[in-house]
Amino acid sequence: VLLMLFKSASAQTITQDQRMQWWRDARFGMFIHWGLYSIPAGEWKGKEYPQIGEWIMKNARIPVAEYSELAKQFNPVKFDPKAFVATAKNAGMKYITITSKHHDGFAMFKSNASPFNIVDATPYHKDIIKQLADECHRQGIKICFYYSQSRDWHEPNGLDNDWDFPKERNFQQYLDTKVKPQLTELLTNYGEIGMIWFDTPMSISKDQAQSLKDLVRKLQPACIISGRLGGGVETDYQSTGDNVIPAATIPGDWEVPATLNNTWGYKKNDHAWKSPGELTRLLFDIASKGGNYLLNVGPTSEGVIPEESVKILARVGGWMKVNNEAIYSSHASPFNVEFDWGNITSKPGKLYLGFYNWPKGDFYLEGLKTKVKKIYLLSDPAKKPLTFKESYVKDIDHHRLQITLPKMAPDSMVSVVVMEIDGKTADVEGQ
Ligand code: H79
Image (tube, rainbow, N blue to C red; front, side, top):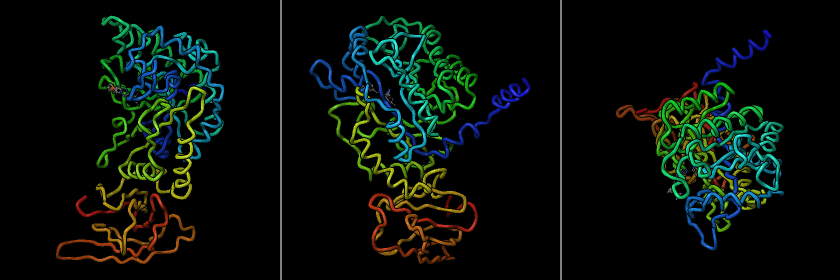
């Protein structure tokens, strides 16, 4: 009893920093958008819908009765949680955030609050969320759940279905009979959950949002609450807009939710894949501004992550194997500007210069006041020192660092140069 008391007392007093530590260290996570929308995959009754795939129910104004029929076809027998986790790990991703229920209202887990769920409504009959959560726990990767708290196109009292249901809603009743029971299931039946990822609040009041936050805190005090809860209620971190990368450092904790192509949910005809080089630059750039990158895959209705996605992520993972020291547990650039050559991440005593464009000839870094002790390529296991020269023009109080780099970029994507500096943090002119 004493031990239990102690445990619950210590759990209650968990600090924001403790809750956020794994997330700050992670920097890179996998988003998974998976649900019934992977069956139409962007096409309904012979017509292609150009927008994001998981919105097809609304975009094609599919009646609830018709959309629900998709459940009877949903049988993702090729789903292998090991393959999902391997794809994430192989990319260097440290957490997985999967849609437990998207706007269409379909639960990818067994729910007693609504029969519209993977176990009760499909021939597959198995709990996807459970299988993935178990595998993540086995393999030491954080499992997080996306949950659409406002929009629910399946429920007369959920928000945003204006093609089936009358305008009048009892949103509170929807929160009480579906959202809270399902959040309780998610935070009770699947072990330790890294975070609940709420999405795009619509007319949720402060009290309603606070009650969802209180519920998460009560059930799992260490569970992070993502940025889009709504109601003006404080969350554990901020989300940028979908695919929105800030131009400069944002103080505090934040994350960019982003797509690999132009959709979240699988679309058979979307092949607009970002290249591994572009993704690596985006990852480095977001870390340079102090944020996390949550990069999405959209599995097919058979239960596999598209082959192109797996290949592209493996290339990013290849880069991460060599360069992850510049990403994991890193902090924002002390310069807080975008350079034409790339950007900078930092750690106590170190700066990591990520070159997106390898300089021709010597490289000059202007404005670093802190003395440099050593410079080397992150890809060089011998850490062979590069030649550099520091100069100072007293009249204009200006510092310049000149580095002699190899002729050829060491990496075809982002080449990382490590600078060991004198002291923990870098002092920069004008910052
Ligand atoms: O889950 C993903 C999106 O489905 C979800 N957030 C990410 C993480 C999302 N919810 N709302 N929105 C994104 C913004 C809605 C954009 C819209 Fe549209 C523009 C709705 C109507 C016009 C895009 C284009 C969707 C339908 C047409």
